[in-house]
Image (cartoon, rainbow, N blue to C red; front, side):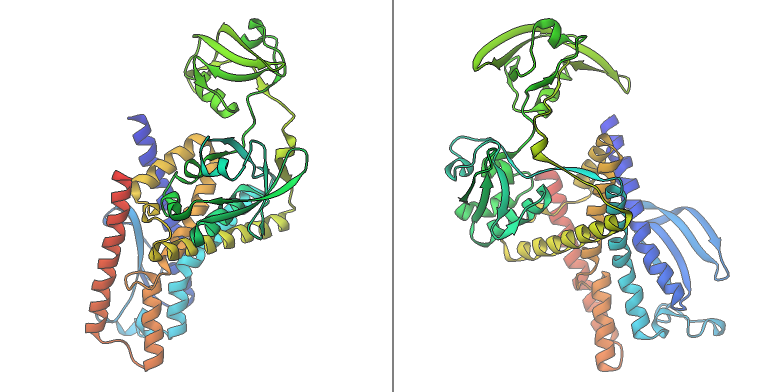
Length: 447
C-alpha cells in the first residue's frame, strides 16, 4: 500500500511540474504577445483551488484530474469580445504571434530539460564506460564473441563514451537490418571487430526491458570481489580475505556488487552459506549476516566493500558552469532526436509499440525514482519533459503541433479554415489520441 501511495504521489508531483512548465510557456508568451489570459489550470475538471489575480482577473487554479492542464485565452470564436478587449483575443493577434504561443509550451519543456541536466552536470559526474558484463550461454552475444570486461569502443561508425550513447547506437543499428557492428577492447587494451546479428528478432528486442536479455549480455558492473574488509564486519569474522570473489549466497548467484546487495539486504541477522573463489579454488563458508537500520528498516550487511581495481571502467567528467550548460544542451538535443527517431520507427513497425507508456507505468517509474534519490528523479523529469515536448509537436489537431498547422494553412490561404474543416480535424485528432491512449493503457496493464 505504501508503494502504491508513493507511486501516485510521485506521479502527481512529476506530471504537475511538467504541465506547469509547459502551460507557463503558453501563458507567458501569450501575455508578451498581448493576449488576454482567462484561465491557467494545472489539471482538468472541477477546480479544487482557485485564485483570481491581475488586471485581467485571470483564474489560476488546480483542478481535480492531474493528467494535464491548459491555458484559456480570450477567443472570439468562443464568445463575444468586450470593446475594451478588442484585439486581445487569440484569434485577433497576428499569425506569427499565435504560432509563437503554440510553440512556447514544447519549447519550455526542452528548456526545462536543459536546466535539469545542467543541475545534474554542474558538480561533475562519474559515468560507467560501456562494457560487457555477464554473457549468457548460447546467446547472440556469445555467438558474436563478446566476453566479460570487454569495453565497447564504437557501435558502427559511432564512438561511444557512455552508456546512453551506446544504447542509442545499438538500437539505431539493430532496427536497420538486425545487425550491430561493434569495436571492442579487452582489459589488456587489444581491439577487435565483431557483429551481433539478431535477424528478424530485432523488433521484439525493442520491447521495454528486452534489449539486454535478448542480446544475451548485461552491462558491466563491478564483480563481487572483496576490495575492503572492515574488521568489525561479519565477513572478516568468518574468515574472508581481500581478493575473494563471491559467487553465491544461499544458492543465489551473485555476479556483481549490486546483486550482492540485493541478496544480502533482505536477510538481516540470518545465517547464510557463501560460495567464493580464492586463488582459483572454490570454497564455502557459513556466517551470520550483520544488520543496519536505514530509514527505520533493518537491512542485512555482509561487511565488504568494492574492489578499487575497477577505475578503468569509470570516467569522471568535470565541467565549468558554462561547459555544464553546453553538455546539458547537447544531451537534450540527442535525447530529442532519439525520441523522434523511435516514434518514426514505431510508425514503420521497426520498433515495438509496447514502448508507449501510460500513466500507470509513468507512476511506477516516478515512484522508483523517488526511492533512488533526487538525482534520478530529476533525470526522469528531464526525459519525460523531452517526450512531452516532442509529443505536443506532432501534427495532431488537438495538440500544439496540429494547431500550428492550422495557423500555417490560414497564412497560406489568407483566411481561417472553415468551421466544418476544424471540427473534422478535431474529431480525427481526438480519435488519434484515443488510439494512442488505448495502446498506452494496454501496455501498462498487459505489457
